Length: 122
Image (cartoon, rainbow, N blue to C red):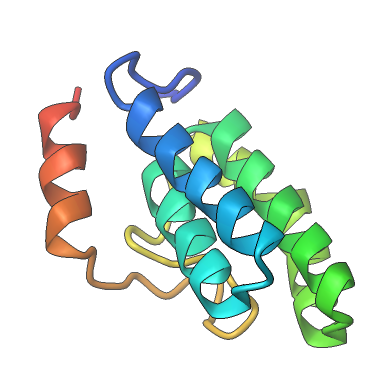
């Protein structure tokens, strides 16, 4: 069994770029765009326990900020399970991480993110 522990060094700037864009859009109260950057960060960080959990934490905080109780409940569940699934390499690839999609549903990865991910596959 393969255990994932750390995100490849070259992938981190792409992940961080999405989080920075999330914070920028959130600060301007562009909620839809902010959320889309969180989803993209989730796709990039999903295979790695720390980043996967970090995105779900931010999604939980987003849910509280906009008072979306479905999102809050969904993120609490994902926080308990997501990092463990990443650690053992059992993730639904491409899943965007929000409570608006089933937690175990694999999804199509946007082409630009797929190209980034493919550069850093082990």
